[in-house]
Every structure is written in C-alpha cells, then in structure tokens.
Length: 119
Length: 110
Image (tube, rainbow over all chains, first blue to last red):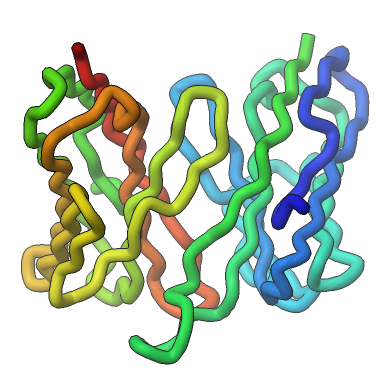
C-alpha cells in the first residue's frame, strides 16, 4: 500500500528519445514535487505543484514538462533526452505546513525513485 | 553561498561512538527544518523534524540555532545500521521550495 508510487523504476533509453515518468500519492497531500539526484548524489528540486498548479519551476530545460491532472498525480515528460539527463528522479508529496502543535511540519514523503539511463 | 551546506564526509566511526553533523542555511526566512536519512540506492526518508527548542528521538538529538542559521544532529551509541547519508533539509515556508543539503555520509565500523 505504497504512499508515493512512481513508475517505471528503471528506464534505459537512447539519446533523442522522449520518455515519461508517472507519480501518484494516496496520502491526500496537496503539494507534489519532482527532484533530480545526479551521480554526485545531490538532490535538486525541479518542479513543485500545489493542487494542480505549478508553484516552483527551477531552471530546468524546457525539454522537461511536468503535468498534474489532479492533486494526487504528477507526471514528468522529457523530450529529446540527453546524456546529462541520466539520474534518479524522485517524486515527493507533502501537506501544507501547520503551526506547531496543529499537525505536520510539511515534511516530504518520497517515492522509490526512477533511475533513468540515457545511452 | 549554497542555500544549505553540509560537510559531505565520509565520517567513519566505530560502533558505540557519538557523532555529530552540522548544517548551515542561508535563507533567514526558513521556517521548517528536517533531517532525512538516505540509504544507498533508496529514497530519502524522514529521520526527524527539528524544532526551535531542540528535540530528541531515542539516540538522535536535533538542535536548531536560528540566530546562527545552524542545525545539528547528534547520534549517540552508533549502530552499524546507522550507516547512511544524512540530509539536512530546509523549507522556506508555505509553498516555498524545500532545499536539500548535499548530505553527510556516515559509515559505522565494527
């Protein structure tokens, strides 16, 4: 009964191809994220959506296009894949932070990651 | 200056040792702070939230110093199973972005 699930877990593809990664959360959270973890293990935010609306868009090439059909889903489509896109892509979700003592602090819950290898 | 800075390590410590990790953040408007743990080839998982008054969870103690913009994690009586990368995480507030440090790698040695 996975809280944040993403598919596929592994993706191997050629340069120039287009691929998508899907993410779903059943936690009832209102915010979802995509993070990229490269070979140096640094987790860098790419996008954040709140109730289907884009709220954070870091300096990501426009070959990356997120889509959120509803607040429980956030998909990532990548066009014209490049070697440098090889990484692990993590989806995460969170609830809006509450004041102390009134609920969660807005911590993130992660999916298991999607390891993308571009050849 | 990086938004969240950590010493990447690795910290190699014997079982039973006490080890401390530090983290500094640049955004004085940051409101929420966390320590996450990431095992090799796994997703990050919340270890503990960090509160202004400091908090303890078993062998783990987290401290926050807002004046110095500094967060710490203390692990007492280290176990082999504590070997992992510990990520310092800062949220600026509300829907602001959640930023991760590079992580500090801990290796507990028998």
